[in-house]
Image: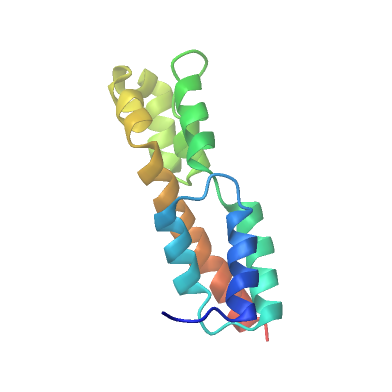
Length: 127
């Protein structure tokens, strides 16, 4: 069994503190953080934690699409064109909104993957 280093334990503690992190996202973010020193990990988690969206938030905004305005979840994940389409078609007659409610975890994971990669690039190239 692999012994955890102080660095791995610190980064794991920080990652577990992120709201709504899934095991898949946890594993992906740990892979992205490989090769970073302690200071870079702290910066990465600060940037990443402020930009990521939890699956619960995505689900909440998707469900609001049934009541207020459809498509807000698509704007949140950076899909502006789909957001506009959802607004003008009432979430593609609510079928798209239902599909998004079912797939809210994958929407959040895909968005968070992009955010993690961007944050890692910013941290690695800042020095």
